[in-house]
Length: 264
Image 1 (tube, rainbow, N blue to C red):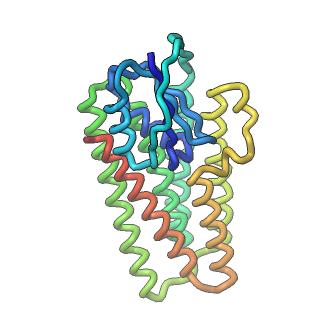
Image 2: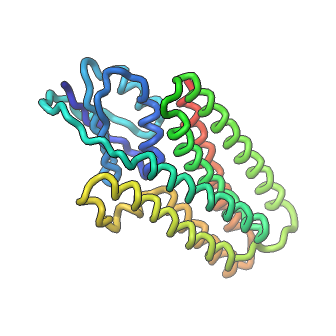
């Protein structure tokens, strides 16, 4: 048995973990995967060569880099029997906030909230694909990944067009209080999701280091929308909202491309 240590520079939250798990699903030489999200590390326990595994990780463009491979006598691995329940829980939270942010974003005329809702939807897709693919064929997983990826890109492109329309048009200012309030709730929701998934890893991580939450891209986005709301009020302009919306739409498309890579 061999174990190979990878550094995954862009592994910020559990959704990237699930992307990697799905990408490596079906490689028979893999015995077990151990993720360390706070330190952005992945240990792969496997038999034989690492080439196919390394290639699959690199294809996701998450900044994966092989650090070392060594022999190990470990043959038994702990399985988390609650993983499926946890995935359903975080899927429900992310999808609920997709609906909340999309609705309030349209009502308050905030593209930042609309864009963040799509980011929540993107995470929902990752957890959903992971759940739906369990017990299914590789073809089924690829089909679901392609549909989710293209749907996500379509929504993001529509969002870009709306940003352009509002940038050159005379739109009312977004409701900055709604932007801030909903983003604070989304920030709490992301923290809960990260806590639930990390709590299942080990007792040491159950206490949640403060730095753990703030390594997540999702949390950075929430904070960005909050700052944009404050700037909308301060500058009396919708430009900060449009800027953060554009940035998040770009991130959503990048996430969609990673999902599409699962369909290859």
